[in-house]
Image 1 (cartoon, rainbow, N blue to C red):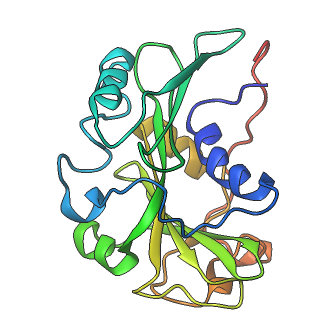
Image 2: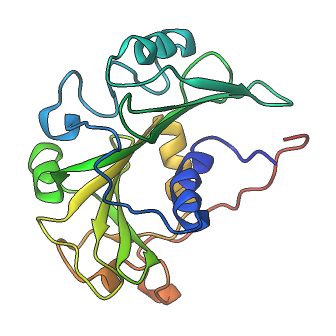
Image 3: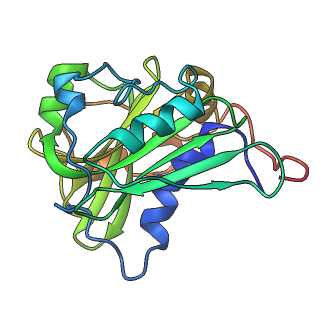
Length: 229
């Protein structure tokens, strides 16, 4: 079944981590080397590598990836029904790192990246400002992630935390990012439970398993499968 817009993209990140067996090593030096969230080079998020969800055509985006010497040529796959098309690729001397999807087959809808741990949360916040929301998900006893939401700018940063008993710190490493369209980011916020950003804090402050009353944002709408999706 196909669910609308960005929500599949966010779930790609969450479900990939949850479903891998054995659990992945999240701090992986073989993933994509990219510090553009700190440098804003070559463009400012939600643009990544010259690709902006909702603006860049699928054909142009594929050409950009194919011409990037850091990455292997993307493998593409089209939906059995409908217009959606997706691509994934690896770092040229590393591992599978990156995914890109177009819901309509014409324009990029979202990009998700698994990153080598070269940026810190402090570095990203210095460059991009503070997030609005955060949500934490445990992975293994000594691995967890906190998703930092920038809804007005349509991107999400994925930070590493050393387990559910640890803290999100200025030195916590950034291990992923997701770039989306404004429409899809808005839908994600309206269909999610999220904590307001309270600064660097214990993982439990942002845990997805917190009691209902602990969330500042709760779903306004409920997604349903699209017919034939």
